[in-house]
Length: 290
Image (cartoon, rainbow, N blue to C red; front, top):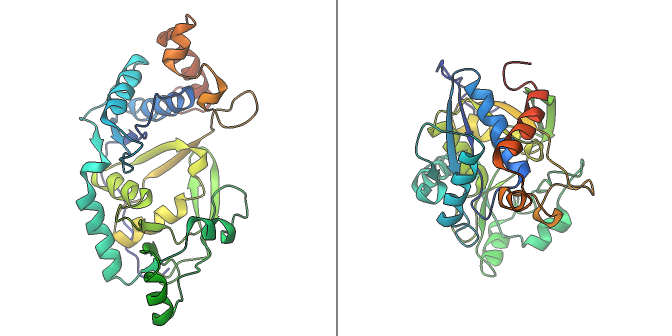
């Protein structure tokens, strides 16, 4: 497999988390996923954490985080530590990226979003995979591109000894295998990427179980590669179905009354909403009672 260090959690306590982006009110799909993550660990006497993915300081705000905390509490979710914010943890992410640089498993990428979109590989129509356009640039080509725009930093999956795909077993979705991706580690504005932050935070907080939406199935193998390269344990993954709107698309605010505030205006309280969402969660068998 290459230069890796595998490890396993040796903590007897199950630790789960919910990690929303504080960019607005939580909708019913978010709340259902949060309840699934919460009940899965609480049903086994575990600990539950809340973490805010606020790397993008333009769209994220502490006010929205406070609102989301109230929404989680309204449907009966509690947690064991004060929520953490990724925007406070850049030093941790930078240290992890530096370790990957020392290991020689990164390269600069100068592609524009349009170039990436046009060249990306998406065999299953979900997670797009960067084709490695900048991986093998000569020094002259790299300097020429650097003169045009600052570069982002990407993981070099091939140099790390992995690829092209990696499998894992999801507790709900079953056996999976997806293409690995040379994901961005640091954006060209210097901000660490989501994939670095989530891997570092799960390890730092001792997370043993990740319950999240099935839209992240495709990127999970690449996150596992990052865990192995950094010597982190891999949590158990549980990817739950996304909530869909009447049009069959992923639930969004364009579908109308999808937040607690929307439904309260229509006379539907949080207890009724919780009961409905919990019935769906129990059907997945995540509460230890099914």
